[in-house]
Amino acid sequence: MARTIRVLMSVALAIGLATTCRAVEPDKLLPPDADTVVIVNLRQIIDAEIFKQNMLDNIKKELERDQAKQLLADLGLDPLKDIDRLVIGSVETQFKKGAQPKFLAVIHGKFDPQKLFKTAEARARNNGDKYSMVKDGDTIMFKYQENEEEPSLYATVVNEKTVIAASEKKLVTEALKAADANKPAQIKKELAALISKFDDKSSVVVASLMKDKLNELEIPRQGPLNLGGLQKALPGIETLAVVIRIGADVNIDVNLGMKDSDAAGDLRNSLDDLFRDFGNLISLAGDNPQAKAFGDVLSSFRVTSKNKFVTLTGKVSAENARVISTPRPPRSKDKDKDKDKEEKK
Image (cartoon, rainbow, N blue to C red; front, side, top):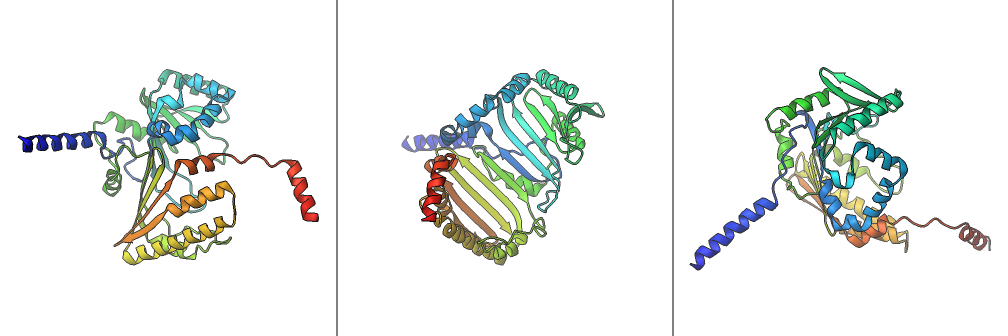
């Protein structure tokens, strides 16, 4: 009897864990040729204690400003209540100067399609040099372009639970077709495998196929930090997986897949040197509270390597988050005058 009870309890626990912590499923609207995916669980972040304590009030104040308040009223949208998750798929991602992003953004939540379209049409009528309504086949979408030199942004409503925006009309049209099809995400198997390692309780997830994408990236060499080792190690990165979990604190885990174990060792050593140099630099700030908080965060990071993988783990405590997010009061002119007098003496 006791053995039966233990078995039943084990089964119940397993079912409970499976129910509360599931692997992340790639969004089926993602472009099939995406090489980088970012998932932001906005609902989880907004509900997190550290967010409520350090950022919620400031965001509420920004949303209460006249212009933002009127726009949100026209859209019938409350970002703090109506948006659940943001998913971004990047195609042909480049990390070199001047590269133009090619992406699709999928926003899941609760929307009023009629209000969204009415607001878009009003913007197009009243500010036609930046906003317009365009067609791609039977699809009507909203276009925004700041000026002729800047890239365009296209957006439309999929349904009352999903809005999409993209850098190209084609990406919007393909996403709408994917929404109508009863198929799972068609992304690359290697990228889907990276995403599947995360659970749906993660606040932010980044998964990227990086092979040969950092070959042309040049890190600025000016300043007190020696970045030569990092510059040499970057081309060896083939995959990137980042998970940020936000609760009472912020926990960060970064996993980098390298081309081989030697490349992993080189990157680990360069990161160790970088964190050490950053720590020494921050220590020069003395008793500055924000510098001390940054120093605490840096000191929490650990870099390890095993076979061809490099792992970074770190933590931002609630107290350090509070100090870092608190703006420094403006320096008074009287204090500046007093300092000038002291320096002249």
